[in-house]
Length: 71
Ligand SMILES: [Zn+2]
Image 1 (cartoon, rainbow, N blue to C red):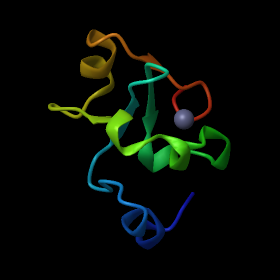
Image 2: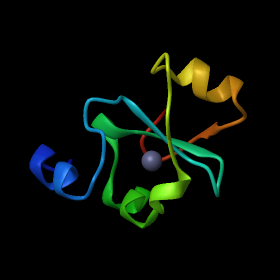
Image 3: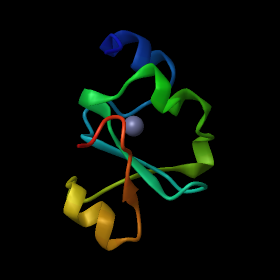
Image 4: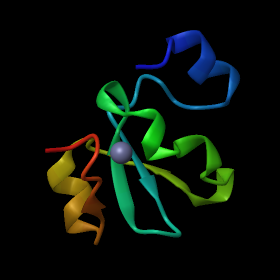
């Protein structure tokens, strides 16, 4: 798991539970993500946060869950 400070420096909303990648239509769980998730390469314009911040909400918007960080 990444340190919160590193995430903040890279511009992520660390208070969010889930981060959507609009280009791949994949949702990641920030608290549980792995280096292999490669979220740092998601462009700023492709990052989506969810309200409410739940996996159900993400899926209802057409995202599929990342196999690495959401089981
Ligand atoms: Zn992931």
